Image (cartoon, rainbow, N blue to C red; front, side, top):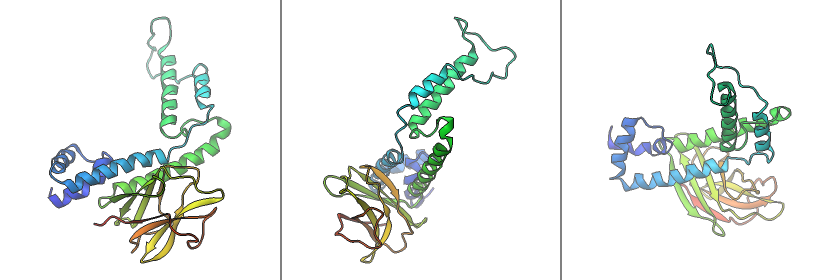
Length: 251
């Protein structure tokens, strides 16, 4: 593999998407390439923020519901003639039931509490799960693009922002951390900077201080992004001075 090819593997390396041979070769390259080492560091931090940003707190009653069902929901018997017995007379089937339900609980916590739900809330939970999965997949696709580039800067009141641009996908993502809450009835709106003309790129969640947003629309010739405070629902064009301006990372 050529050195030029190795430079394109930073995103795949961060997401553990390389083969063993590719990873070994890239790690040797990483020891000698400060630019790639810096990019790996930035992408790794962004990946962690993306995971936190797309998560959602599980319902307060979920743990109690699952633990209650552990004693009542029967696991399908294993495909063996005679289930093995454990000391004390507990069947292997019951052990598997407890293990499976405990695993569901852990999975629910890891994926924002959307893997387990009560029957009467199945439709709502399914929709939330699909939306979260789609968002995570889109964000991960941008991050893992061979040409993904990241740039991090300080915003307002101690907040930080990271922009990840994948030119090959014509898409970009923005990750904010420690964003102060906007004024009541207001929202942060993102804008593409098209040579001084601001083009809407979506809204941020006013209730979240840490968030990952896939910018709405193609990057095209935009050179960076701006953030303004707008009325709830957003505006067609900026109505306030930007609270932050960030340039896209250069190639």
